[in-house]
Amino acid sequence: MVSGLSTPEMPTPVNLQHEAASINALTATKSQHVATAIRIDDVSVTFPIGRKGCRTVLENISLDIEEGEFVVLLGETGCGKSTLLRMLLGQDRPTSGSVSIAGSLVQRVDARSSYVPQKYSLFPDRTVLENLTMGPETSKYHIFGRLRPSFRPFRRQVREEALRQLSHMGLQPSDAAKYPHQLSGGMQQRVAIAQALMMKSRVLLMDEAFSALDPATRANLQRLLRSVWSETRPTVVFVTHNTAEALFLGTRVIVLARQNREDHCGSRVVLDMKLPALGMNLRNNGQQFLDLVEHVERFSRGDHHNPSTGFDDSNDLPETLNAFPLDGETL
Amino acid sequence: MANLSPFDIQARPNKLLTQAFSCLIFLVCIGLYMQTSISRHRENPEDRIVPSGHQLVAGIRSAVLEPAEEDDYIPADNASTWERLHHSMIWKDTVSSGRRFFISLFLLVPAVILALHIGLFPWFGAGFLRFVLFFDKIVALSLLPILFIVFGIDEWSKIALIVIGVAPTMILDVTQMVKAVPQEQIVKAFTLDANNFDVAYRVVFRQIMPQVINSLRLNLKPMMLFLFAGEMIAASDGLAYRIAIMRRHMGMDVILPYVLWVALLLFLIDFSLRVLNRRLHPWFQA
Image 1 (cartoon, rainbow over the protein chains, first blue to last red):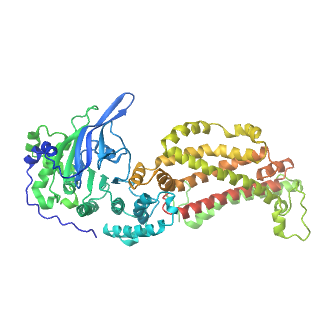
Image 2 (cartoon, each protein chain N blue to C red):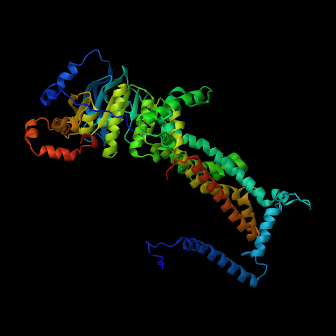
Image 3 (cartoon, one colour):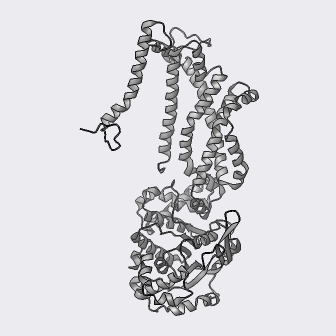
């Protein structure tokens, strides 16, 4: 069903201490020859609340995301990771700072990036096939362009491609005529990914795309996404609050957390970590994976200032496992 | 034995019993009417207030087969039933009321389009929303004298009354529907390289279409209400005009069939819109 991705053994052990030390060095040692796909330059976001109060969500975020990276934005609920993704989309504007994709500023939502949200990712009034063909059709023929005679052969061509994409995503051709409400949640997200891929844009933004799915479906989709990514290597920014998912999917994990609960204090990047390109999971990396989960979660909880308490606390690990149940693919 | 207690929420009456029970009140009403009619006719055989079955049939016959009093048309002796029906009173009234009704229905289309723009385009919202909110609070019937002065007492004042009465509510309703479309859908459409009009008409409008039709179905009754108000006050034909005229000589034998005929028409329009909605939008849930 899924074009399966084998996860070979990762020979090089990840040195946690080294990782933590190299956080700051990462931006500096970034290789110059790889093009920057997304540049987030000193972005701060403040929302007004009430009459005169205001709440800072993000504070001085600066990131360079290279072409072909699989970046996972990780953080606890309300840390602003979805807000940051909306900035990348162009749906919201930063209060200060700027976001640019492929060298030009992001001012409004456009086709530079594809988008897979958690819910409402498909158009309910269109069948699966129409959902898939919608992107290429609208980008070439806008509302009245559809009346032109060249539209019909083009549509036929797009349909064939959509059917190919559909079977690639592990759906049956008979699903093509179904409406989204007739599909399960996992199927819907498969179609949503296919729909995004039809646009062939180099940037794919996903907002908690698998968070509403049950663990088994979620694991399947994670494998699917990994294999899709390793085929064409688009730049992916994937927002999640699940650490195990982040470590499995990403080649780079960015953790956002706020320093304290005050309104004026927004989230900052507290951890920026490269991962082995093949992804990690519990089966292949064992204890090392668990340690890494714990390590990352300490950052997202915001208690990395005093690492001694975190490391020495023997109750910490089981608690972490309860708080972030590991998914099917990790067990 | 099934539980027959009427105050049992968990009762499970069988289908036949349910059907029979739902007819009961209809039968009671018809029975009461007949009882009243018979007793009144016993006292006065010429009673017109509660016409008997014979009188009703005669009334329906004259309404369906004979021209209106004010018409000069005299059917030929050998005229076919269709010919007579075509020139009959009820036909004439239905056509003239129906024309007003459908013209105003057609005029609601721009209102819906405007509502789509108000809900979706910030500049339209800024320009129109507050005015529509204000206009919605004006009682449309209070504008009727003004409309008569402006448009005269012919067709357009009545059509204007219907549109002015129903359009603001419709606009506000549709605006709410547009705003209820998840933001994700609009963002997604833009990432699929849609332009503004693609998003407005091919994403949002398509999605709210079934709800718009449902809203229209709910507004059929207010439309009919405004139509009847206009016709009863100033008209020379139309269903409500006839009902108002018949009141003068207590023509209950015509009024009652007219009332039921209007109800039937309204039901048929509502039903066909419902069927149309289901056919056109198989994806629509609830």
